Image 1 (cartoon, rainbow, N blue to C red):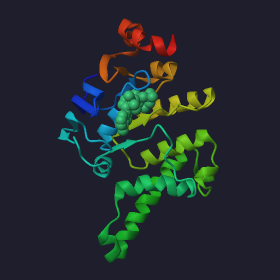
Image 2: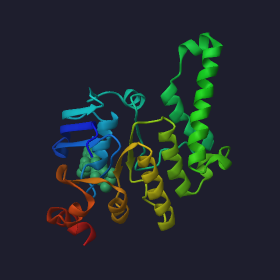
Image 3: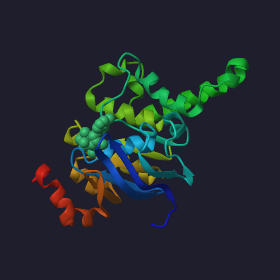
Image 4: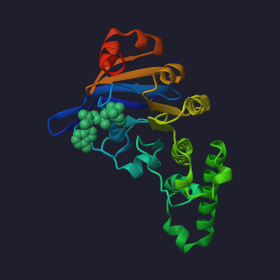
Length: 255
Ligand SMILES: Nc1ncnc2c1ncn2[C@@H]1O[C@H](COP(=O)(O)OP(=O)(O)OP(=O)(O)O)[C@@H](O)[C@H]1O
Ligand SMILES: [Mg+2]
């Protein structure tokens, strides 16, 4: 694959007091790739996501997205530039409807415009665009029938899908998924893997943090492995599976 890099992370570091949660990590993601980011608990995966998404300012290093430096940019700006994410711990609004949860993603994309408040026709056009993006995302995830339910009523598996739907309503170029399969049963995991693969096949670039190794091995084009904040491998799934350093990193974890 020779597509241009959409994301270039260079010697990225994030320290918490003395702890090097992310320690000079460099890697690239090419447009259209589905890259796995794996590593034992505490390896620095979520911290790395937080740095890319602007939720945390890195201690050192650089993040370049589509040729532009986004190191230290604020999360709303990063989202508007086309990077969407989901969270390891669900962040949905339980008391508002499925529809309104997903539309927050689309609002992030079209913004709240002052012009719309002054010129109603501009506001209407924006509202229609938000509704279109929201309905499209709901339909794709089979959530249309329950769009009016409070999100808190959904079973866990559908709440996880709701988060991905909200991220997609932003129409991102790059999607960061932090353990989307955690807590799902095996049928739901298989369906999720198919969905993530379909998104990639339609041209979306995906960076996937996941502990479900069979799923990661099956869906990813390439896998980056972190251990104690450092990158220890970056290769195709078969090579990563056979890498002695990766096996050693997981010994305490998975036997
Ligand atoms: N805000 C914070 N303050 C201090 N230490 C933190 C903070 N966030 C993360 N850490 C520490 O940084 C290290 C990396 O944490 P991180 O959550 O990035 O790991 P992870 O790879 O996502 O792990 P998991 O697989 O368990 O989700 C851990 O030692 C964690 O305790
Ligand atoms: Mg994590």
